[in-house]
Amino acid sequence: MKKIIAFGASSSIHSINKKLATYAASSVPNAKATILDLNDYEMPIFSVDRQNKDGFPQLAHDFKDLLMSVDGIIISFAEHNSSYSAAFKNIFDWISRFKVDIWYSKPMLLMATNDGDRGAKTVLEQAHNRIARKNPYKIPIFSLPNFQKNFCENKGILDSQLESQFQKALAVFVEQL
Image (tube, rainbow, N blue to C red; front, side, top):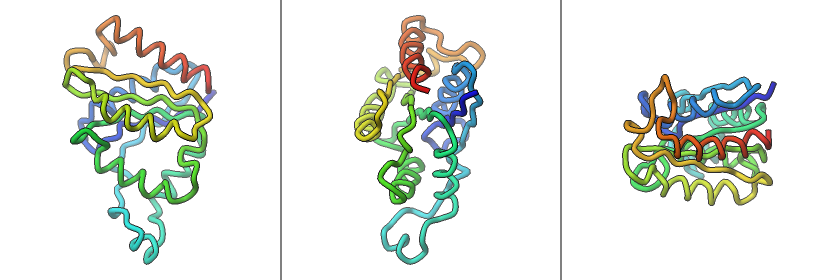
């Protein structure tokens, strides 16, 4: 059985991206999924001065250890002002200081959603460009526009075309696990 981690890159307790990441993780056959909440990894704002003075927060070590322990990673990005949420960016800044291979060359599925027509595509493209740079796997992406209209927690993705796009991205991820 494969082990995966999934999370919404948001600190909202009602994160629609966490809901989408959870749905994706539950769609992976023969996998045990751990769903992370970024609120459990709240750390001081990253700075080189803070790192030099205090070292790395234990939570940064804990997050990296979890990434190392799994076979695949699913992230659904919240878009804040056309970029990463502050919660994700801060974790990303801390864990990127350990070693160059931030995500341990794991298969990944990157997604994003919001209530707009673009489905957070700006942050998804930004994340894909950064994360795919040194990852040896093909990293599939999926954007879900108009979350409230196109998603139901009990049923999943409601629009058949969007569900088909999701299944194609998921298949690439699953094949690489």
